[in-house]
Length: 162
Image 1 (cartoon, one colour):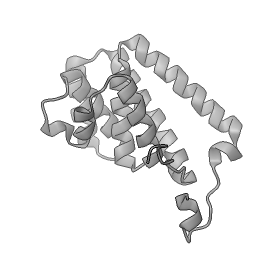
Image 2: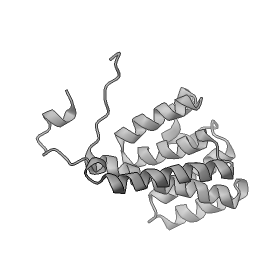
Image 3: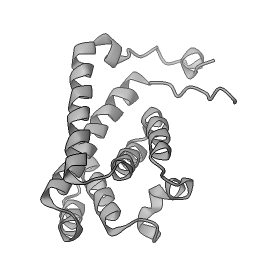
Image 4: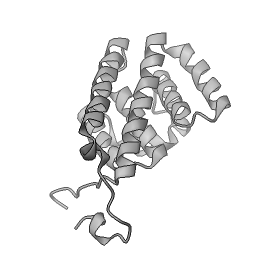
């Protein structure tokens, strides 16, 4: 049974279903951002690392589930996924991946001006301006999807073999 049936909290509106035109527009933005990232030279793994790190920071279980699956399909390792929340403390991520992760965090917490400046300067050392822009757009987009899923309380479905 889903979490929704056991909660004392009133059922939430799935805002993506309630306002499908608005959600479809967000999906279109996401598709454009994904193409922009690819054109800028950010590979699918870098995009999924951004999606996952932002979703970790926001506590979005639905997006974490979805983007873990996408990262694994893109040949990301379970080892790197397991330490993603502590990426700064490992040597498992390339300088470019570290740069996009720092940009993702700075975009997710825009109130931290020092982190923004630091992330931007580090990114300029290893990424092109197109890649910096694309990484920030990926972070902006997943932040929006996180809000949709968190406010709707989208459930994470059990796996069939569980």
